[in-house]
Image (tube, one colour):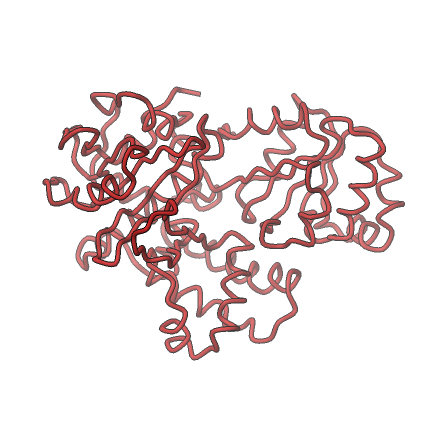
Length: 414
């Protein structure tokens, strides 16, 4: 079993919080992780609401369902019985024992307020994404924390070829496709996964018409992302009203298939573009949806978009266990200066990250980072360009070109 880097954070939450929710897309390993810690560090009774009998009991008699459970309990796929949340609240208010409930869910409760509001102040929420590259390599990544240190390392310990990095992009991080040895078998899994997810989980979450359009919308998004949300253009392309399209996108985000990256402004007087950027949650899934291959990525020049999407999601995963826990944004001015990723720590310090698919970079590749530094002023801490080369190269004060594998090689063996 591949050790998940979020495990220590999960155990720490269970040690002092009555309810812990581990959410994330289906098939990312939530149940596997919950069962693993239940057999060792967190002895608990495991119940899944994917089974009919407990689901029926939880939906029709939540009070009686919970009354029959003593000690710590793991309830899997809890979003299937939203009426459980107020009952869990009542149980916790009577006895705020840490680690009383470990819940797992395949829907983002931040986008489903009726679920999250019930347990405000009583529940800690952690997100489990598909495998990170560090998890696959047995490394607990510390790239984000290193980025905010006074100095960055002078080298990347385990450089990788472009072909190997492209392989990471094509396979992605979902556990099941990662274990399959052929692209045909991985595509078969992704096809079944999307069909099941969009026709079962989405229907459980929302009763809206036209769900048959969701696979087409997801494919259209996969071709365009990472890019800025332009609902008018997307509405014309998909021939779907903007209001309906926005509901669809909220649903896709709620089941962790897409992610929104908001614009950074920092309350500056600059005229910054406020549109969010959208990415697909896994580049293996993106490659399947677009029907691409590693060779085709290179030939048609689309590798840059895939690499940016890949880096964004690797950072999203690492935020869950980083010491700093920054927020993630993008940056773009009205004059077109851009930075792909902006990380802002709790004190307001900023680190900018540009992603380039080239094996060499020059001063012109740092224009966006310099614009960010000028706009941010003193809070700007560091800017790096992640590229396909092998050496760390300085390009000015607090500006460096850094090889992509630093993302998962700056860390400690787990």
